[in-house]
Length: 305
Image (cartoon, rainbow, N blue to C red; front, top):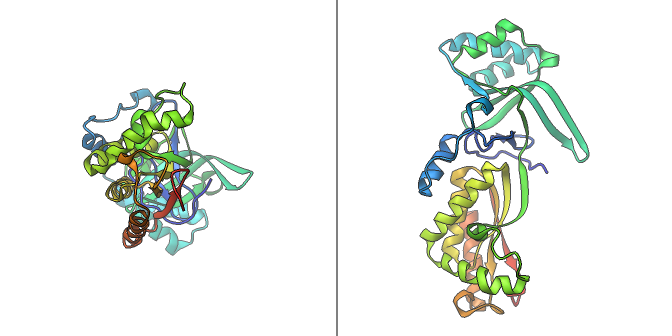
């Protein structure tokens, strides 16, 4: 599922954003190499660095000192690909990261395109600035050598490939902490015994930050670059989830849960307060002026309206 529009992103280890098409993630048998944002999130969670990929499983990344030669080489390749002289020069000068290797993506529903050898550029804002099919544009051995020796970081995918990031359309962020617990219980009993008591703890924003940081980090590590999150009834905790998503660069739909019946006193709202909190949450998110964040209320059997 593709999401249109520019998206801020959190380092290539999780994903990189595309200004006009889709999001991308590593397709690999091992975890992707941790980027700066992953390391920051891991440290915030008290877990240290994520387990790194094995050396044999990590595509090589190289950077060198031949900046001018690399930029001029890249400009020529892009011009041959049809970007025009001015467009090629602008894209080449703005690029700080290049991926060289296979790309698979979907141009429309039911249509998949594979480019066995491509060059993909990422600018300083973390957005994909171009993709080039090298079967058309060509890339001579000396040009590849120039790119490898330049200031633009070059990631050789080798036998890896880039694919669109996954879209998770239904994820309960607070439940990440007890994933897989009590699968033998029927739903309503499971809610009463585990979910409601646990989610009531999100009245504490710091507890929410710890769990939400872990949840967002792990979604990104597993390739989910867009997620529709259910939060809890707590406004401050909902704001924390939005903050964590924005800091990690994950595109997210964050839903405040509304519950004024059929739930324990420790995890229940008064109807009018629930409505006021929902409006306040909507205003908070919209005032961020952040195109990668949207909000919606979540109504359930525990909601009267």
